[in-house]
Length: 103
Image 1 (tube, rainbow, N blue to C red):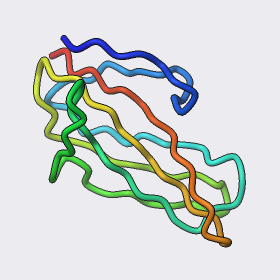
Image 2 (image 1 turned 180 degrees about the horizontal axis):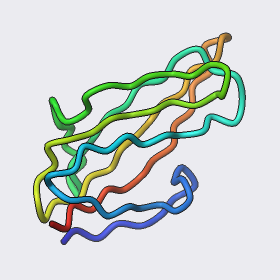
Image 3 (image 1 turned 45 degrees about the vertical axis):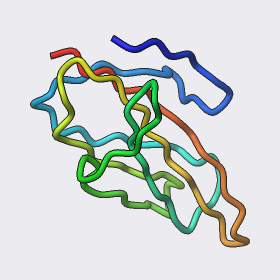
Image 4 (image 1 turned 180 degrees about the vertical axis):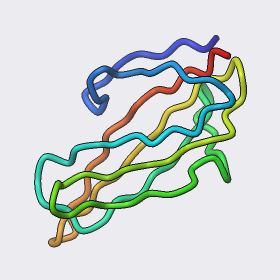
């Protein structure tokens, strides 16, 4: 299992355990009005971006949230999900969540 640490970008709690058979919808709160969000899932510790594991990223502008659906994770691999929010003035910021695929 890879080592990692929480940072100022981490959500609370900063990590979540998942299974390789899970299809998981994860909701991130922006804390202010947003117009868009994007998500990148990377394998830790190298930070290598994955393809096809993020199914969708949807924004709820009324709730100021983004929901990211991930699936197809590999057992024994640790991932970092980075969600970047965009405001109407094009200001962007990122939150991260570590996903530990344990079974």
